[in-house]
Image 1 (cartoon, rainbow over the protein chains, first blue to last red):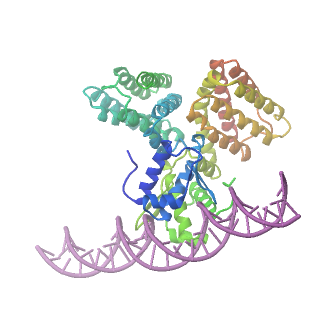
Image 2 (cartoon, rainbow over the protein chains, first blue to last red; image 1 turned 45 degrees about the horizontal axis):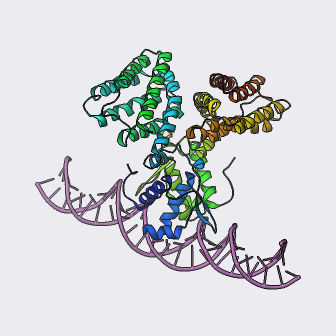
Image 3 (tube, rainbow over the protein chains, first blue to last red; image 1 turned 180 degrees about the vertical axis):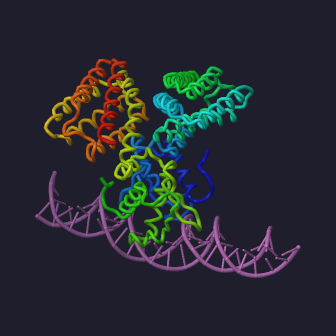
Length: 233
Length: 233
DNA sequence: GTGACGTAAACGTCGTACTTTTTGTTCCTG
DNA sequence: CAGGAACAAAAAGTACGACGTTTACGTCAC
């Protein structure tokens, strides 16, 4: 999935971001704005704006007289959904998917516990609806429909936690779920156990049982990690 | 703390980012590039590059014929250290500090557990050294020195976890610690209990006791949260 | 070998002109 | 009066060319 719409800026940004994330430009390599302008057949104006954005993501660093230097991975803003998307499209998707899933396994249980305490009736209803949707699409190669409900489900939990930082992780989780569904790591049908866990999690949140919500989410997370172990070496 | 060095771009970006984060431009307000160029007495080029960066952080949205619209808080890239810094400087610092501390309380215990398993001897040594530094600066209004060791300590733990996403949270933690030290929320001397917990955590990591490391970090986190409750209404 | 100096390469900034999209208005028609 | 089609203007998007500024690097004298 590339970002969106036309526009020279978007195109150049997406191409360069993808290339850097894929390691086609190793750290330390220098890019010259003039060359880039020539390569993409756009004005230096456009290239400079792209570089500035890449710089704000710490993917590159621009210095006078030297050029635009690609920065090492440790410097990247790996929480930027755009960067995540670029990396998930690239070579080390497995590693990346694992890191992100471990992150989820740390965050989501806590978020679910908070959600059990704070969720509004509307959120509970929406959660149950999503769980039902997951059940309905859990058999018969309806992966796309399942994914949609799965994403919505986790987004609601994170939002219902009432913590802004958790809520904003919804995009990251969405990228992870979409990434593992679209690329490799997925059986033909989702794990039935996972579906059940989601249903029970929705119940736990509705009943305000924080401990159960936390425990169930942990189980979902370890399941996802285990699935990664099996499907991605 | 403003970002760094000179440069028109940096100045305009920092000023605008600060203003938006502070709520001086409520969501929906439109800014015109020409006006901004005039206000800051810079060329439209510079303003456009700034806008592009702000846009990549989802702080604003630029549309033709309408202008640059400020986006609602829910859209912001709140994991961007730059955005965090801007927000911590602004009005709702308490709310922000609480969100971030809850985030830490979810992440750091898990990271510490992993660190206990994965830390290299060098990392263990550095950790102990930091803990000693915290002890040494824990009395007599040496808050700055204490802060420095505290930041280094948590950064090492996050790095030693071996998970990239955790490691990259070091900057966020650094911002939080610096924010609470510099602005309001700190006693004259650090909580002695917290210092002890850090020392014991360093030991637990060195001994590879993951469970203890996780538990101790949790205690540190609840302590920090409690401190927030006491000092920030 | 060392240090001062100069030069050129790359980014940084500017101004202007032109294009493109989008909105709002006007005006015509049914 | 309603509806819609053509039109005009506003603002961002793009391009180009010029000049300023910093700084790596080579040169030359000592």
